[in-house]
Image 1 (cartoon, rainbow, N blue to C red):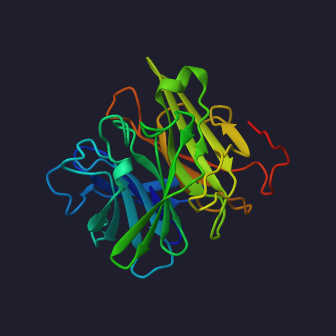
Image 2: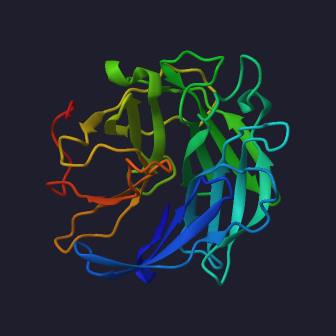
Length: 296
């Protein structure tokens, strides 16, 4: 999901068998929006193999606009997990500009790499054409309590991948451990090495959901080994009134009338009649930082 608030445009990316995007025009007000939805646009250049797109980020204040996308790898021999650069088309859809497969230790294989349907759902764009990627769950060769991160830096037509030495600490509710994962990362402020907001989601049969937002400190962007990073603060989103569901996407929302920032979230219905595609707008109760170090 990507938002261009000055032009009131919002893009949603689908992980359907044939990848497509939907562009929305945000009309009305911040608190009472009226969305004009364009027809879904297939991703141009995706070929015949399932792409399984998961994350979409936009680099603002560039001409032309630049977008990047991460993908999973259901069949790595035909379509490896990759990072893509996309071109925005006049139709409101996208075309693939460049593709860079993720390193071999991330590609699914026997006992190693990404777990099935647990690919890179978190993609962060940083200054200097740098990107941080994280999978939904730990790689097969890693501890389930640690989630490794990957730094990518674009240099012309090339993309250099560097494994980061500091993983994220995975702390799931007991009932949701089997289906707990990271679905999005978002810079909490501007800067070269900002603190990050992390969106986590858990599931348990037959239809129970957990949604958590956590604040992470600035992460070391180097290979030096370090202990897993624990959140500075975390919030159970059910406690703030968010309907429990498969909330996967997170981006910075528009500023409210009183100056407070907001967060925009989107849910994935998994093509299920028992779920919905939704948008939610969250805002802090106060604009300044909270005093507690263990807010829930």
